[in-house]
Amino acid sequence: MKIGVMAIQGDFREHKQMLRSLGVEAVEVRLPRDLEGLSGLIVPGGESTTIGMLAREYGLEGAVRERVRQGSLAVWGTCAGAIWLAKEIPEFPDQPRLAALNIAVQRNAYGRQVDSFEEDLEIVGFDRPFHAFFIRAPRILSVGEDVRILAKHNEEAVLVQSGGLFAGTFHPELGGDARVHQLFLSECRNISPA
Ligand code: GLN
Picture (tube, rainbow, N blue to C red):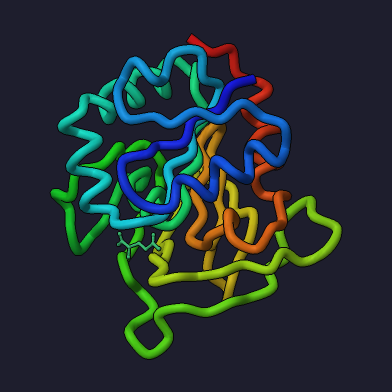
């Protein structure tokens, strides 16, 4: 199985390392042709406006949208990547993005004083808490009926799934615990890549 990491901007190297530590072939994705043969794509944390603008310019946004529509690619967005997947950003409705996952998000939602924090999360299906790092994290304001909440922080969703689409507002590529990556990989195994 081959998994891509969108390598336009942000901390894609950490995701690649995490995948490689799990024995998975990990490739960097910048252009539509890089999607060939992939079962899954991770969109990393970083700056969601930069990632969104360049993904549109490189033709990647449209190519990913088509693969998602076919059901031939699972996609997981972390932090800025979650913003890229979100159908709604009420404050920035025109920000370029995939807009495929039925959630509404607010960028940089935890304010300046507390713009980074750590938290032990209970994640559905995990037998012990997951230590999560939130860095200038967005907030998931609401989720659609088709979206399953896998983890919450202060009663708000921080990890969600709808079919092959996952979004999380924290950084599971930091800290050396690979369980969220493994969760995504288990979904990718159900995909027949294009
Ligand atoms: N604040 C970033 C944004 O809005 C996301 C933060 C992150 O990915 N660590 O794009």
